[in-house]
Length: 154
Ligand SMILES: [Zn+2]
Image (cartoon, rainbow, N blue to C red):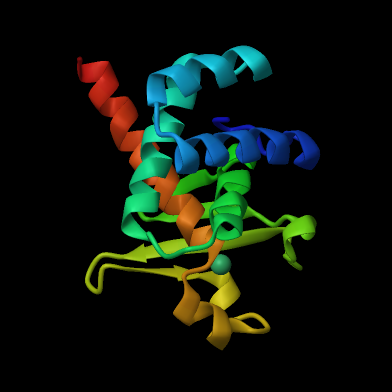
């Protein structure tokens, strides 16, 4: 899940689907992390952190559709790469309608907003108002990073 941009789409989708369904339908982070990490040979702690971070996303955007969450989850599973303090590279996924290989997401501290490359591409005006799933994936990634730091401190 971490730094694995080569993970193939079908497998990523399978894992992401199981994770989102479990988070949305019945939130039991420890139990779900145990089942999913065992089933897909993933690191337990990373899986648990993903579930907790993703649940935070769900709390923040309670009105988003299940498919929006699924797309965001697929992106996290495929891998988000941090390239600067407030910069991330999100791999483009053709199956999700992306036309570019990479999307750059930046966080603007002053306005506390995220800016994604896709805003300036075709359909950008529409997407800007909707919070794209590239940005959602970065939000989850950031939350995962901060949860991992807490884990290490413990
Ligand atoms: Zn985007």
